Length: 53
Image (cartoon, rainbow, N blue to C red; front, side):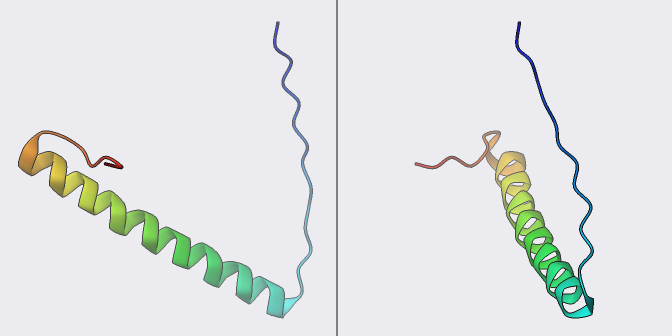
């Protein structure tokens, strides 16, 4: 039997840290969505997704 544990932490960033966190998340979202659209386009055109090859 596998036991899973989880920990929750609350963070209380100051204003400068909150701005940096939001910028980082925004950039990550942009990159993820960009490559998701590339993968989707490749799949629609070829019937195969992108690979690491």
